[in-house]
Length: 302
View 1 (spheres, rainbow, N blue to C red):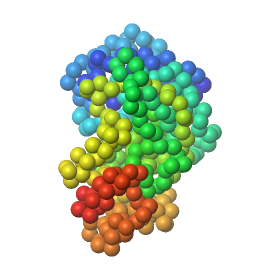
View 2 (cartoon, rainbow, N blue to C red; view 1 turned 60 degrees about the vertical axis):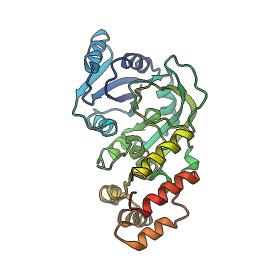
View 3 (cartoon, rainbow, N blue to C red; view 1 turned 120 degrees about the vertical axis):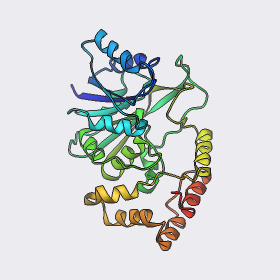
View 4 (cartoon, helix red, strand yellow; view 1 turned 60 degrees about the horizontal axis):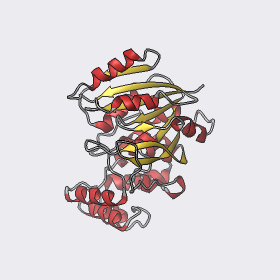
């Protein structure tokens, strides 16, 4: 039976975490372990998890109390602290998983341990009682992706993602100190560029929307509103090109290095800025998204 460590970054999640843990330990066909990294909660989240672990001594739960670094870096730190396992996954503190979530994603991957692999699934956007909401999330499939698109678009929601050991080693080389960088975007980009990506076209967990939810909404309308807000705040998209050049140059193709160099240097090299602005392949999927991206480049906000 394959071992899977699930990383949960918690923050003030005392009210919801137990239901999520129940669904994680109800997974079928896998040997599940959980690493909880608490991002300096102000409530009793840590105590709730500790008591849960005491009531369920057969469920292996490791709890780490950390400094507040934000949910994205907290997830990455949790992953970097994990012990050896066959696969690794990520869970939000307030969702509910279906029992076959992990095994479905694992079965989608090939038996190539030396190749970084990532599998991701669909989710059911739900209310607190697990009732399906009218507006669901549009998920991109691997055939819709390009390397350039993954630099500016998260295709794999963190809670939908499972990676193998090789991917974990790839991701844990470094955490880029880039403003507003989601952990799932960093993981998804690296796995698409340097490994293999698989998609499970099934809703395998309930993505529950609370008033206190930290992760984004993900629907088309709210995504446009979010991107417009970020643009007005002089933040277009997180630019990870410099980090990829610095820490992954040994596995980058020359053509990819050339593009990343332009994206890294465009603020000080005018011809690189023009190249990015007029690159027809460096775009988002929507007109509004592309406008925000190009505006960010023009004004040095990317």
